[in-house]
Length: 235
Image (tube, rainbow, N blue to C red; front, side):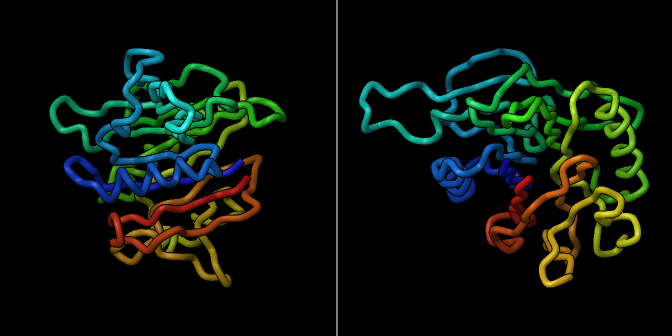
């Protein structure tokens, strides 16, 4: 199972970021692509499979075979955040062949501002919940409290889970806390935690209690397209 996570820092009115995501989808190699600060789903996903918030979208099937692309093999699960500025909205693109159940937005809890977007998938060995998150920035203690609430929620669900996204918790400055021994998986190359955010820290990683990643990596440097780097995990 190959999952990509990226805080796109919004892409309204831009071309490079949507093109980057579209190209990733067109490779067909990613089972899920979890986008934070998405603003909106890609414009190609203009057919509603399920209305509401979150909304499930898909691409219109082309009338000609030559128009078929890998995008038609995905659903876009879109959670709209905010009333006027949708920048912090989230999208999870999931392969249709893996999609199992309706997705759930965790309702606001005591400290949970944005919540998490859960996609239930079946990779062939049982159902798994993948939670796309974007925790509050600028306050480590608050982000940790938010994460604990989401963690309690995920542990209460029926299926094993993976939490992935922008944690806004710096793995480099908090190494005793963020480590494989504690089920947090930053990107590590040559025994060094890799920077994923332009401030010089690592804020983007995965949390998994049952599925330690087999491989992981960074696709681009932060600031090339966003202040966050796109990161990839293979579970």
